[in-house]
Image (cartoon, rainbow, N blue to C red; front, top):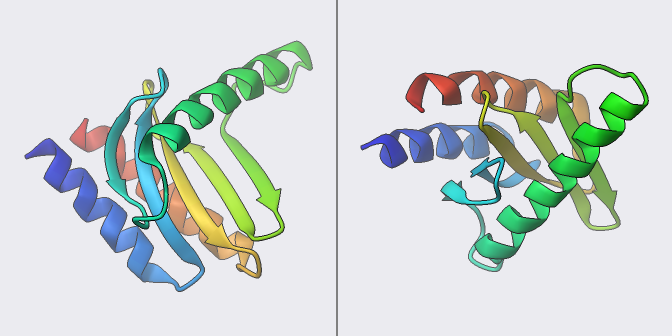
Length: 120
């Protein structure tokens, strides 16, 4: 039931723009909670790597006195990986195209991330 509701949020997010290629809700310990990712994506790998990046981002933000971590953005040649806080114990991970309108993707991701704690 809870997973179905989360998948519904993710599918809605994925359908908002062609710039979003997939999304997932991941626990801060690196466990996949719900996913609407392309079949070519290794869910275990993305959840583990996201947790590692969040840990490093959080520590960096604290050490450099930037406050509490809100998001992590990784840009590669084939696109973006955007992680947005989705409550105390989870993060929304979004895959976006390389030519994505990042401001709109971030707005949509932030809104979806706000719905996730209501389900969890």
